[in-house]
Length: 345
Figure 1 (cartoon, one colour):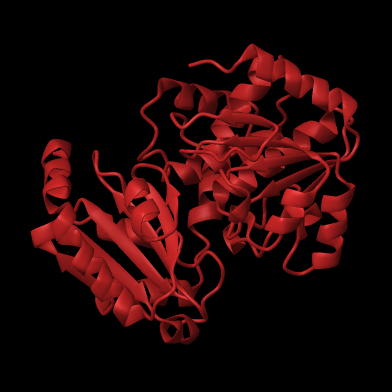
Figure 2 (cartoon, helix red, strand yellow; figure 1 turned 90 degrees about the vertical axis):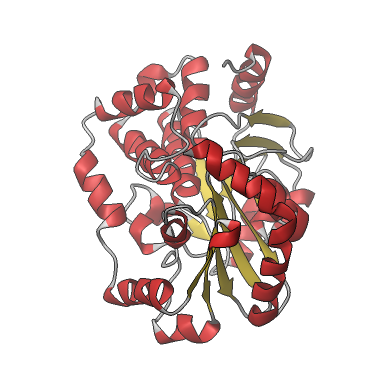
C-alpha cells in the first residue's frame, strides 16, 4: 500500500506556503483523534510551522495527560476564539473524520473558512469537501496513516518522544490494545519504531486504561447487570443507558468508551450495540465480528457510519422506541449476521 507521490508533493508545497495552520478533529474525540492531532501539532512545531489545535468539545480524562493537550482550544468552552482560529487559518488539517459535519459545533464555520483543507483519515467513504485527501481505510488508525505520510514525505528523522507517545495512544486505542484492526504487519513495525524512541508503553497503557473513576466502574456494572439484553436468535446483544443512568453515575466524557465491546465479547454474539440517551437524541455505537458491516447498517438506519466492524450514529427517538425499532430491524439481517458469525469462528 502506498501514498501518492503527487499528494505528498502537494502537502509539502502547502506546508512551505502557509503560515497559519489549524488542526481540527471530530466531536466527542477519542484516542486516535487526539493522538493524531497532537502528533501532527508537535511535528509542525518542530519544523518551525506555528500550529494550533481546535477540539469541538471535552476530551476524556484518560487523554488529558498527553503532551501538548494543554495548548489545545475547546470550541465548546471558547467558541469566539475558535471562530477566530477558523477565520484566520490559511491551512486546516481535518484529522480522523470523513465529513465536515463530524465536527458538529463549527461545521458551517469550517465549510466557510478560506483555508485550504487537508483530510487525513481512515474511515470509509470520505466526502468531497477537501482540497487534499489522504484516505486509507486499510490502516488501523489515523495515527498510523499520519506516521506513514510523514515517512513518505522524508521526515522519518523528525520523530520525537512526544510525537511517539501521541502516535502510540492513537494506534493502541483504535485497535483495542492491538486486539482488532491490526492484522497488517506494518502496524506493529510502526509501533516498534515508536517504542525505540524511549516511550514507556506500560505507563501509556496504565494512563489510558487504569485510571477509571469509581463511578465509571459502577456505571459499567449497571451496563452489564440491568441494562444488557442478549438476542441469541440474531447473534446480537445490546446495552442501553438512559439520561437517569448517566446522572446517577456522574457520567463524564469518555466513561462509555469501550463499553459496547463487552457485549461483543459474549460467545456467539456477532453484533453489539450501545444506546446512550442524550437530551434530544440517542447516540448509537455499533460493533461486529467478521464480515457483517455495521458501517452500512449505521448509514442505512442511524444517519451515521464508520468502519466495517465499528460504527456509530444518532437517532431522534425516545429510548424505548429506539430499542424496539432496533430489534425490529434484526430479522431482515439475521441470515447475514449468522453467516458472519459462522465464518468468524
